[in-house]
Image (cartoon, rainbow, N blue to C red):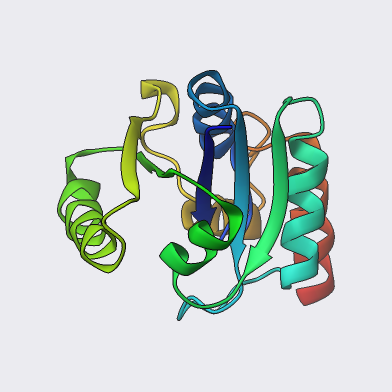
Length: 161
């Protein structure tokens, strides 16, 4: 079975993430969406909330599984029996960081491949950070995130006001 791991913070999951996931499942038998516990970021949503939002958003995408992990992605991928790590790229600005990360991962585990998937141009300018910023300022974010995520963001920011 060809398994791939698609790691991320997913704080929150966006339609760009879902686009990459839908395309990755066409290339692999199973895609594990790996929600990072410790990523040097200060997430808005808890680990459990991020996992639940991602599970709901991917419930209709076959051959996916949502799990959390801590530590190095290559160690988690090895535990899962993965052959590849999926990375989405939005623009040229993502390339340098992603390229360095792929080289480091290859050095840490030569058996793992990194597969880069370019996002659709419709999603090339969105990120979880910009979506949170827009939601906090009451912008309409419905075209950027699944409905469950939009609802969760509105609840989250209503509590913070």
